[in-house]
Amino acid sequence: DEKTFHPGSGGEEVRARLGLTDRPVVVCVSRLVPRKGQDTLILAMPRILAAEPEAVLLIVGGGPYEKDLRRLAHERGVADAVRFTGSVPWSELPAHYGAGDVFAMPCRTRRGGLDVEGLGIVYLEASATGLPVVAGDSGGAPDAVLDGETGWVVRGGSPADAAERIVALLGDAELRRRMGERGRAWVEEKWRWDLLAEKLKTLL
Image 1 (cartoon, rainbow, N blue to C red):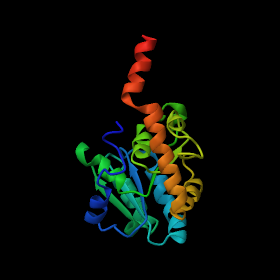
Image 2: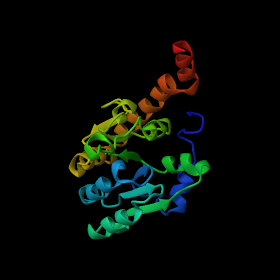
Image 3: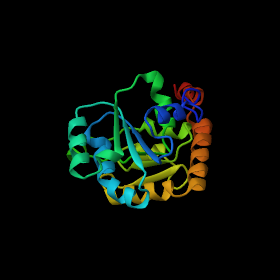
Image 4: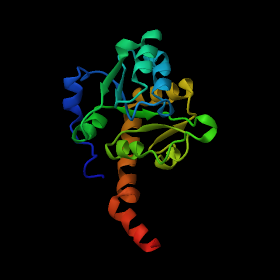
C-alpha cells in the first residue's frame, strides 16, 4: 500500500524516541525466525562498524528467535549497536521503516528447501518508504528487488556479502537517494493494489 508506506511516514520521530537521530540506521522489519537472516546481520555488524562506527542495527518485530539473537549480539560484542523493538502496532510499522537509512533482510532457504521465503513484501514496503534494500536470495525475495536499481540481492547466510552492500549504501548518500527513489517509483508503477487487482481480474 503505497499510501501507507511512504517517505514521510514518521521515521524521524521513531529515531528521536530511540535516541538514533544522528546515527546511520540499518533497519530490519520481520518476524524473528532463523530464515529471515537477522542473525546474518548481527554477524555482519563488526564489519559494518569498522567502516561506520556509529551504525546501529534496528531489529523490528517479535518472534521465537529473539532470545538467540540477543545472545548472539552479546557474544559478538555488538550488543550496544543492536536495538530490538519487539512487536510494534501495525499503525506504527510505516514509521519504523522510515527510521532506517537502509533496509536489510538477507533471508536464506533452510531445511533442504522446505523453509523458503515467499515474495518478501517487506522489501516492497521498504522501497515504498524510499529506502534502498538488501535482500537475501531465498525463494521469491529477489522478485521484490530490482538488483542494482532498488537495492541488491545477496547470498542468504553470508555476513560478508551483506556487510559489503550495507557499507556501500551507508557510505554513499547519493546512492541511497537514487536507489530509494527508484524503489518508490517501481512500487508506484508495478505494485499498487489497483494495478494488481486489474491484472487478477483480467486473468479471471
